[in-house]
Length: 134
Image (cartoon, rainbow, N blue to C red; front, side):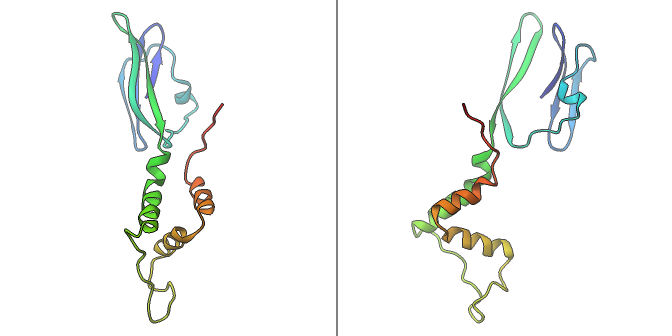
């Protein structure tokens, strides 16, 4: 969500990864992200809109959370199922014992389920946004 705000909120722009839709006027100061053409941050998901209202909408903002769990959840859940013997990898080509008839992604996923926990976590760390903490 991007805004043009002065004393009141003049314009609200809803941005997605595909387009932006604006509502309202052209008064107030433009959002700095609009001036610099900053792309939409796809590592976060908006979970709530917040604002202040004093006869008119004074300010508006968002509460967003990192999408890290959404990105890695399938890998973590499949690994847990394999470790608890509730799932098993697809068998490889029995004749040749190679990955020739298996898609590359499937072969990599099978190998990822077998590696040490530390290596598994390290590989997944490349898929998620870095989290800055105090």
